[in-house]
Image (tube, rainbow, N blue to C red; front, top):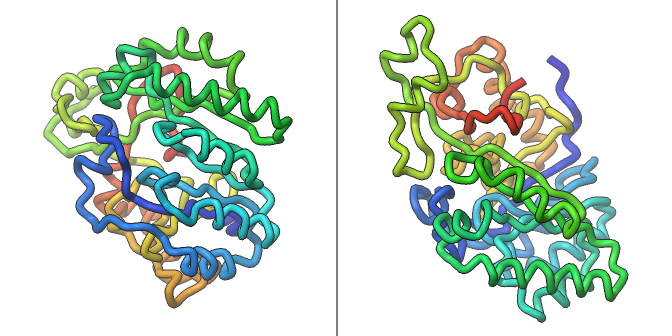
Length: 307
């Protein structure tokens, strides 16, 4: 299988978040240490990739809580990174933060909005009107400044929000530059049903523990994960403390493939740990975390981590 050149990084500027959303592991299930990436480590990370063109400055956590975020954006731009983006929950988009965003070389800002007002309140625990006002203020400021910043809205599709998709799109399509949907990350759990002939996603869902953030059902991975080879372009995730993992689904950092404290991102992408992981996928000998990696089933949105 072709391996694309490493041209993109997902950099976890922090895994600290000010919300406790029901669909996110950050303040619910995540056990690894919380912290913020230092500006010095960010500089070292960027400097270790020779062909970088694209940075996602978010992973698990709220990026605007990192005091060095805008220095990072400026530094990356000055180093020739053509495209920078980060996702935010939008709660901290006050006038000062909006001003800093619009005066930075950030390419794209996406705001996570899960469903329509009632659904959003249940998932995020805050008033939808607060977020809507923040988004509208940001767009108003962008338009007045004639900034090239692109502003998007992204929604996680799962059992509570799927019903909102059509009305959600109708609401935001004429306000934001783009609207995106992504399926919720879930963890499969092997059961007898997985080996039963004729088992289906629908029947498996009936046995799931829906009170958890990631409901569990029987169907496990049978296909290679394209992230390991560079689905659209080569990309790895650098956690706030420098550890490197193959994709964002590994929120506990279990499949560490390197560390930018003593390696370059280029050497990690082509290194022994990554080569071994790719071979395991090619052999269908999936590590447990990969075997159990799955996404919400919906005919309205495509999965990300399958070929």
